[in-house]
Image 1 (cartoon, helix red, strand yellow):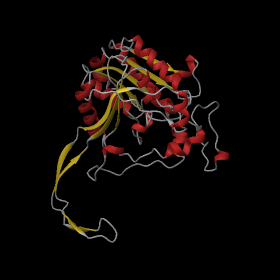
Image 2 (image 1 turned 90 degrees about the vertical axis):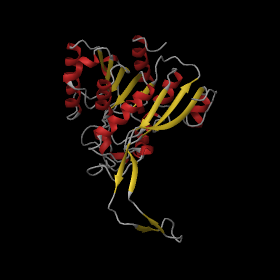
Image 3 (image 1 turned 30 degrees about the vertical axis):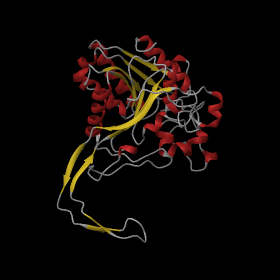
Image 4 (image 1 turned 45 degrees about the horizontal axis):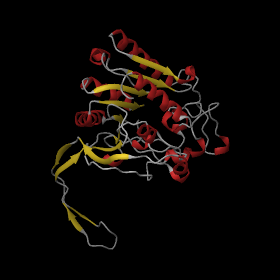
Length: 339
């Protein structure tokens, strides 16, 4: 990597207002790369004539040949003053990209820059099939899209039945910390996802861990299952796992592999009582019980029980995200992973 100092206010500081109140983020380096993937051969397809530009000259395109697929896009930001002892890898949830950790939908600062400011070398990535990782027609099945109102209830911004196309008629959970005024902005982040690509996603994450780690891995929602699978595959390289409302834990038959990997699991408001999330949370806790019985170290925090209230499923986007980031940082420091 290059050895130079970069002091960008650019995308690392969210908006002019923040730039006026926050110190510049000082980096020793930043960049991006792709990792993982495989080459597939396509044969037996007819040659086509394609008009790439209206009014232009048609071109013959032979679709047969070798194609690069299932790679993953990664960005890294390395602070000048490093305090995290290992790189921190942030993995997003289903139907989303690394934007999850960047800027809050309302323009507030995201966990990406918060953890850079705390001195972590941070790596964010768009999982296979998402965003800048690209996609192909080699994925099996159909992509899944979420309509405008789905995440409002699925992500516990409001209770079941609370969504309405009319903003004035929407209701939220009491005291919600999600920036509801920016909900439409949040929905612009959504991308299609497949339900058949888990193996390819895990393979790319393993390739990233092999390239960068030892490290700390932070997962959210869908990537919870991926984080545990990668930790089971590379227990010597994943030194800690921060699981933010994971939708699935690890394999109960492989818990012995994680006895030396401390886990921090965190849940927001209303997870205990929600018709879907209560089941997800209980499955996570059942896994935690098995992991602890095998000698693993797990700390589970229900935020309302420690006085942090109003959080949705998108904790990193909630208005109190600095408070939850501090809680994670305190745990990491306590585990000797940061100064």
